[in-house]
Amino acid sequence: MKVNLPKTKFFCDLYWQRQRQNLIQSGVMNYRAHVRHHCGLNNVNSFLLGLNHVEFDMPKMIRETDIDFCCLKPTEQQMVLWRGVGCPKENLPTYYYFKESLNLKKGDTIRLPGYIFADSKEDTAQIYAFSKLKKGIIYKINVPQGAHISYDSHYVFPRNSKFICTDSTAVNDKTQSYQLISLDYIKPNKYDNNL
Image (cartoon, rainbow, N blue to C red):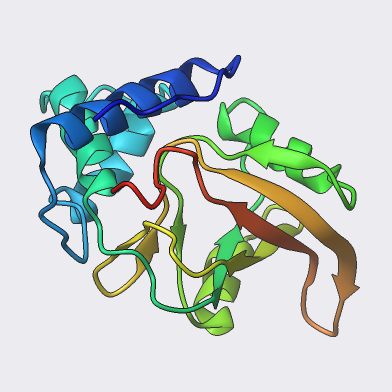
């Protein structure tokens, strides 16, 4: 079966398209609820962002996880997920992405690095967003039906997922201040009806 792949300028998109093509050709259609390294993806994220060196075979874990995302059972309905991020120290690589998010405006697109975690409860996001270092960010993420995201007590999106900003509001309450950013998850081209 020949699949026409759309042209794109992002290396990761090309990578995903090749993975999708390989899965279609090999007939691998073993749908599952979560990727096999779901609980170890925090370590993978640290490795990808250069925060620390981990002893595991990270390239192998990343390859396996990326392929696993292609085999996940698509979500059956639209859902809203929440993600909280506290302001990191300025010398950390994550600070760049934090500042980029704070500057988002309606209609802007952003690619968040690594495998990002989210939860179905806003309260959980608030725990991660509020830190002693200035204000945090709470992302309200609209996930369309048919998305391939990993679920095992919490949700994880594929590596370097892309989102479009639908709203960004500064919130100041009695105890905390934070930026509430609404995002629509953009399903990658690699997950289409051929899978």
